[in-house]
Image (cartoon, rainbow, N blue to C red):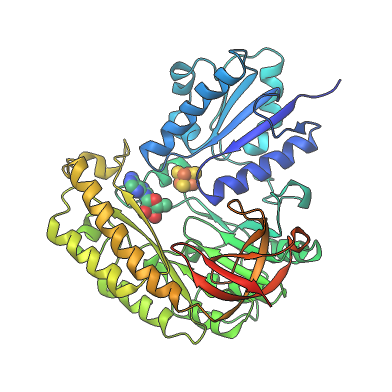
Length: 444
Ligand code: 5AD
Ligand code: SF4
């Protein structure tokens, strides 16, 4: 009997992208066919994000949309990922169209779960832990398009920042064995991948129970040793994200200095420029600590690009404290900055504080910081004009037929005129022009 076709749609972060790839791998292995059409597939699965209220709402909007576009006849509808983990069986009440709910550690069991739904079980629910035998591997054909592979090295989070839902949706930190990570990168290289991104909520909190595979690699933490071990595979580009300031050690910068293929990009979310707010967020560092990391990063001869996240309008944040954040952003001159308005997440410690910064003020702060970052970024990007950079070509640019789009080792988007046959290759591009969030250049 021909098995059903499955469509997976992914929201949120790269961990979710990686999970969707792993889920697709398990499904294909079990004989399912993957579909890229929400209109035609027999099974629809939404892999969800709950980091902010808006992200969480998305899945329910999408269910409504899909229902409309399919003329009301819906196939088996599943919700997986962070919303599934947090809401569990409540999703069945909220959206009676949903027949399957699978949490953040259940993707390995998706084939069985779908099977159970297919033979008539209603409201199939799995919020269980991963099986001890589960591997984190993804085969080449299950990865998304392109020559970039996401490789999870640590999952979950133990930090419990007061605003954040991730420790609840993703559970405690669990590090993957280094030998397995290195082996996967080696295999990816053999399969022609040109870039790996080591991913995790906090990659530099990496702490495997078994350090086999890191012997002989220097470093003050398992993470900096892993970076060196992965760089030694000779993979053309190695990136890693996200770094957590409290666990940041200077020898991460040393590793980048030593290995050309460790890319010159660090994403280090600061969240606020006020010590009092950082304490209320329970981030575990002060502004001065963060600035020391920034100094070390900027002192590198590799010209390391630095990006960050900031939350505006955290409960009780005053105008003065926000002004401290503005000052920090000005001083740090981030190459990129993701700005978020504080969004109350039920069950987190911050949800017990009054969400007392009015929506209008949050918007004002958001816009002020965005304006500041735009001018900082304009001057940072301007320094690239005239430079020669290496670009990994993703494909045709969405904006212009004649242009290709790709990205640099420092993770900036570069567009340039060129033929489609260059997709998936590394090319040299001279930068001619700086735009707001990208660079424009010509092939050399
Ligand atoms: N409200 C707003 N932004 C949040 N983030 C995490 N939780 C919240 C929240 N409750 C932001 C942080 C984090 C990024 C991934 O999302 O800045 O670094
Ligand atoms: Fe969203 Fe965070 Fe879950 Fe990623 S880990 S999907 S960002 S809530």
